[in-house]
Length: 331
Image (tube, rainbow, N blue to C red):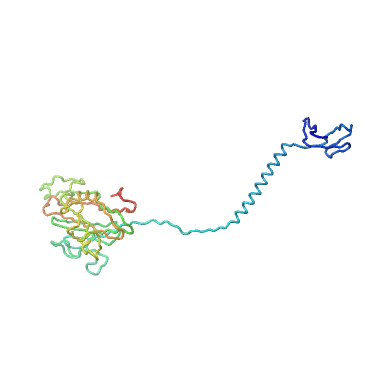
């Protein structure tokens, strides 16, 4: 029998696409057959469990999984066979730099110097090294306007309780910027110009501002101050080994007064304004000297009696690298 044979299974016709050649009397193992005639055979399907579509898909899926697994095994084996090398850099760190400002001071008053160990038997005590002009201050009496390089705390550049017209004082302030180039600023804080008392000589002048306000005193206008960059006779910083006049507490021709092109004398308030507009460039490791001088002129008389003038002196540094135009000063 040739061609397509029909088999009946669960009410559906399943076309078995096969080529059968059956001879009379033969019976394949999946069929049960009986002879009716030589021209015609009747076939009855005993058991065929076929689902052509499902089997075909399942075969394709199984083949795909097998191929993927095979290729993956080859790839893994090939990777393991490559030449390789590993290098490691250890100990990588970042450490921030530092800018630290240290300050020291040498105080002068009427020609006397506040010095350490004046008597040669006490290396920790500061006192005046000689009698000042007019007999004041007295040699050997304590003073506190000089100190060695340190961070500022309770130090005072100026701490005088009995000044008179004609007195003159100066502090040579040494500024040390540790490690890095920096911008430097010096400032005067809030000023307290106090009247304190109005005694009879003062009211006789007359003093018409006898009060308790922060600006009622007269020293703020009658005292005179000046400050300059004490870089010596040779412009710039060469160090004391090359220019002994650096930081010598004496103004030399060519040294620049802060806020003035003449003799530099001005009120404390004017000096405060001038310092606020001044910024210096300092090389790390160098010593930067500023001279700050004061006087109560003879012309000022009884109107300043018992008055006092108080103010803080401040310094600030900012890094110079990556900071060409420093702003945001805290003083």
